Image (cartoon, rainbow, N blue to C red; front, side, top):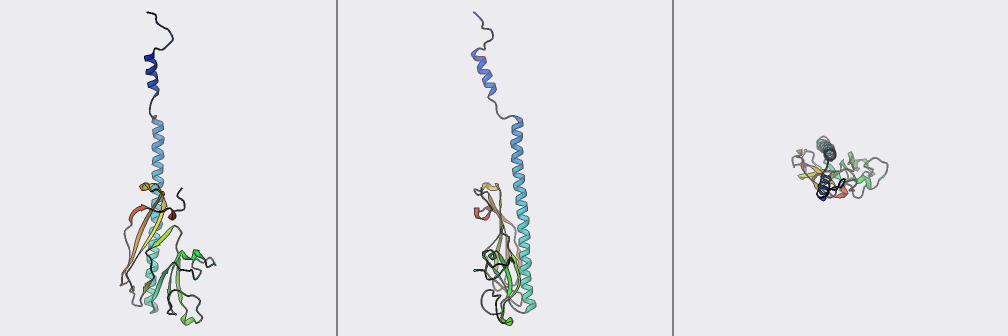
Length: 215
């Protein structure tokens, strides 16, 4: 039987072909794992930063509500806290314009004219509402469940209330379709004027409109 020199037999060709059908190399797997780890780290950092800003925002809100309560005690007049003027009636964000951007604020004032809502344009100083403070809300923050608050001269709140301070960050966490994660804290005010910040609520997927981009 003749032997062909220099040509591979069919069985040898199959073995060599199978040898080329391999999976990922160690280097490729290392790169993939590194990218996954980097993505997770960036998401964690983004969440931590967003959480810190939200906690700071909630603490500032509590401070301002405490200020409204103490101003009512000191002045002997009810002090109101209003959210999102509709339509905007004054330059809340100090940009020298009265426009839609002035909705992004809440403000503390004494109502002197006995007309509901803040009116800074009264003629008689004795019956002109007095603005105590206007607080701008950053576009990345959101307040929900807002209603006008009234602190009495005795320090109590006319109606118990609960506000939600909320922000959203871009992340892949939780498989959010919009790549946005919402985190929030509740700020509660009871009828005797006690103001508290609750525990952070469980994160959940947010709508695209709460983030700068969903792409």
